[in-house]
Image 1 (cartoon, rainbow, N blue to C red):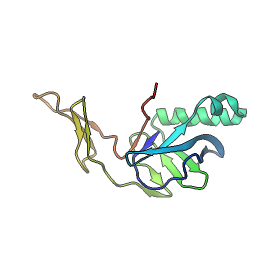
Image 2 (image 1 turned 60 degrees about the vertical axis):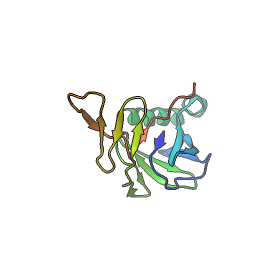
Image 3 (image 1 turned 90 degrees about the vertical axis):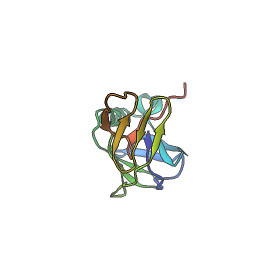
Image 4 (image 1 turned 60 degrees about the horizontal axis):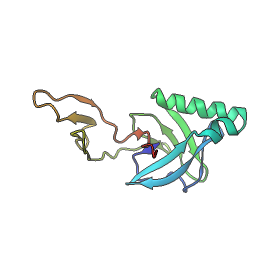
Length: 141
């Protein structure tokens, strides 16, 4: 899970918890964003039954764009939701990033909160921006 913030959320490898159960860990930050590794076989099937249920519930809520409250051992309390700015220790992240997405001819205008497509010259389509927001991390397979 990529969280667009450069604010400290916790030390690398710290446990990430939902409802008191470990559902993941903090991983290496990338390009000024904090990264969380959530779910995985160890949390879903390798721990106790409650840990697996909480991990699945957390991932399902995120996939359904519902807010999820997480805490990081030795770090911050987070409220994250797909498509929304994260809330870190009670403070909503306000910073917008300027992004150029190579290959799909899209860009995000600073502060606009809108992704604009420049592929078609006849019309411009808009959709909600993903920044600052939470995006699933790219698969490394």
